[in-house]
Length: 512
Image (cartoon, rainbow, N blue to C red; front, side, top):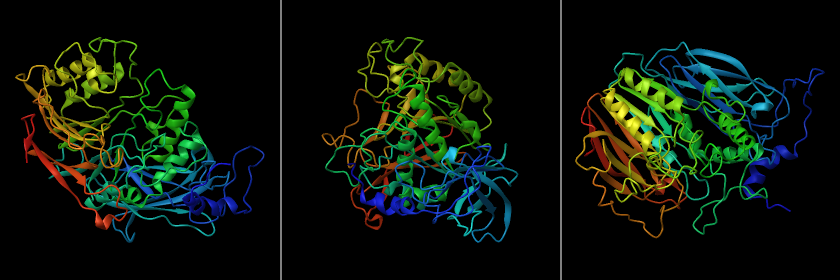
């Protein structure tokens, strides 16, 4: 008999035990529209994402019993009509856009509404309501549109986060992000983890449905649902629009273009899309998905969101300098360089998953350090960095997740020559929760690698990066949590451990 976590009973048991009359599929096989639900279906909250100058994506997923083992969230096998509203005020006295969409069983009753036609550079509030009897009203979320092309914003405040393992720490970083009320949140991968960890320091557990590693659509859906039951994560989603990419643990640890199977990818991609505030352009087609995309912020900034997983070459080519080894596809590489050549904004941010600078090698250009950093794909890394130099990109900033530690590094034209030209900077966000108190318990206070003088900062705590961009500079505050095991956020402090400034045009890090 499988163990049932107590939280599963609380969140999943009510709907599982309920028996209600619902319309069934008609003769055509198309699910009928449900007219009633057992209880509140908005337990996973609301979210928005990928803002443009005139709109954004609105998201929710109906799940009155989020942790039901079939992954369907306690929903019937019927469509449900969902009304949505966008207003300029939190009381919804001035509704400026509204409509009705349909949540279907095939998409786990998730909703993606692409709103357009709004004013640029403005905050909005949004909510959903089920078209059922009784009807249910969702929590309200806050989002915003980006500045229009050529519009220079006074500043852009955004958070950079990644790696949120449910078991290993409380999600206090998400709560602080919500309290910051940023303009944008960049989440750079590992939103869920496909495996459970066996650590005595874990603060909670994934639901145990008799499997150690999830690899089916129902199991992936359960992982996302369990994460969304956390109030801090729901608050962070409701506080600002997000721009998200996935890394490995949304599918399988260290996956690349040769593994896992197309079927497993298709199921993992489907669950990711169902649970993320992304546009229809990111909807998967079987085992493929277009994840790379570009977000503009007027003439101040652009975000080039990269996909470093789906087309990554495995280690079958052992030479890291071999030009056939790829972290991103050839088409994506050309897309990135073509976009960088246009230069409509002061700052170009590359939102991606793994370490771009050389952080491990002993300066031997022939030493390969595996396939989970750009150092294992040196020819492509050189083409990209040389490409932005050739195109005169004034202010490239690489934003990275994955490694569960804060890092900051200057990017050099030749990483093996400390006297070569500065060509950009990299800011690496530690994990939200993954790793528990320390990413490496045997080395909780790592030292800066002395043989890599361009690495300016290294710190092993949980947190995120709080960034502010203006036309003069980017300020990066490396936020750290005082505790990962204290469940009460009121007893936890979140503060900058270090602050760096990147002056416009200088392509280097200065202590702030």
